[in-house]
Image (cartoon, rainbow over all chains, first blue to last red; front, side):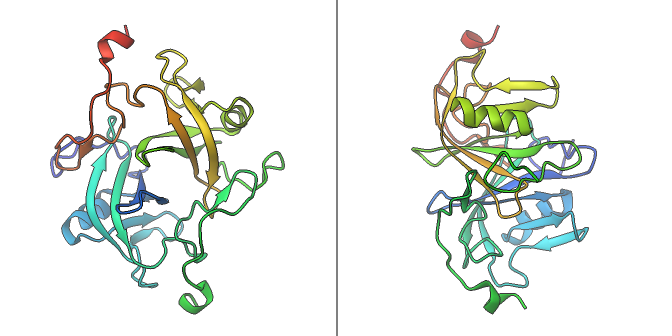
Length: 124
Length: 124
């Protein structure tokens, strides 16, 4: 239960919900990451997408390092309250590989989508 | 590692990856569920979206009961190989509540999206 939000959310045993980011203009699915309660509250409060990094074990503002921020248009919650959808305006590209979307490969290994920045110029 | 697919996939400790279904025509994000290796292989083999139900602990073909199947246009994999995206043609609605998308509520509790079928007429 989460009285701080307008709907009940289920953060599960690990305190996280999967968070899908979708480009509000193009409709492209950009990435899937995870949010804890704090990340979700920060996203709503600041209007910029926040996640929880499972590998670094810390709150993570998307684009804080790269500049590729995600301005939030709307946050949606699924029927079970155990997944969220960020509708965002993506600056640059969402993927650390330089592609607009992290989903730039098919299951067969073909590349789809376009590279919109040079990752070597952004990440040292 | 997964030699059966064209890209390396990381099914994690629980053998699952989150699977996002997106309407191939409208771009709407329809739902988020989970797939194990078998579900993903079945999806590719049959061209209909399969998932793994964590609550029922079994392979699950979307729409097998409701008729609201998802014909797969393409399966995409994210940069880390730990999330997948099904681009689908959705019959009826994806959500058991009768809405086209499971993401039919905002974080504040407002309803967005439309109800496309009567759940009482589909699920007994």
